[in-house]
Amino acid sequence: MVTQNTAIGLALIVVALLALSSKPSIFISPSPTPSPTSGNFGSCMSLPQGWSCGNESGQGGAASANINSGILSTSLSNVGGGSNSYAFATTQSGTFPWSPCQAPANGVLPSTLKSISSTFVMNSILNTGGRFHIYIALYYWLPNGAQVSGGSSYQCLDTQVRAENINGAWTSAGTTETYNPGDSFGWDQVTLANLSVGPTYTLTANISQQCARDESSYGISAPCQLAGIEIGIEGFQFQELNISFTSVSLS
Image (tube, rainbow, N blue to C red; front, side, top):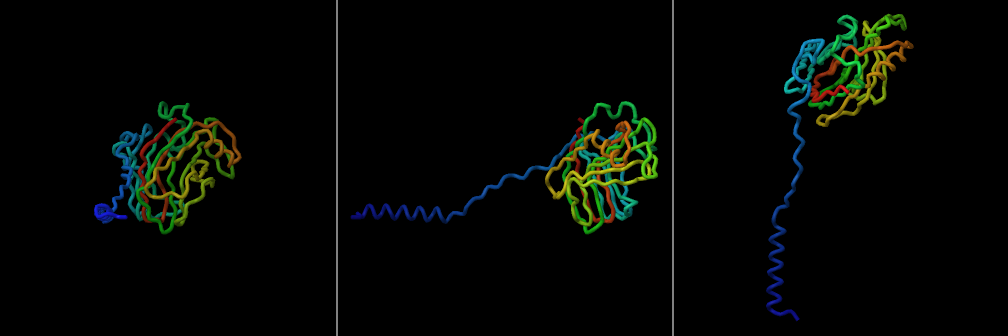
């Protein structure tokens, strides 16, 4: 049998439950990861020491390559050009095939280096066509003299590890390609694919492997010495690409 006191108690419990259920639910979401505010590229320096600033060309559009608070900020927008006239925004250290092809500068890149890595964030992208690369390029000097392959004779190598986008589609990781820049034997490999705005990515170039695979692609075999490093973006006929390189590691 339910007594009057029991009934009153049950009524009070129901009222309390109804009051609780009428309060709005509270959802707590984690705080977003803050964007890096500093990096380890140091400040702008002239070549061959580097890291340099202002190595840029928009091919009719806008280009920028600057270091602030140790972060390398690169951007290209509304660029023109073509397959033989890339727009670019990069930083460099060392000597390069076009300067012209020459031995490494003393005291700039230690001969004991094994790999080069750089982390980056893609801040924005707008691409309705054309082509672009996000890359680390390693340039080599061949101390034993010029090599001959396919009718070309060069004493330098031009290699890249990169993310590559052609006509709005990311190239699959593992893709390789040779190219002839007119002053060196060129070879690249795609190591990152399907990038998006926001996350942090890392490009890594193995110094001995880049040399060996470049030479193997041309059927040559010769000692090589790392002479120059370039980090940045390049391409043609696209609307916008903005990348922040937050760190570089010479291992």
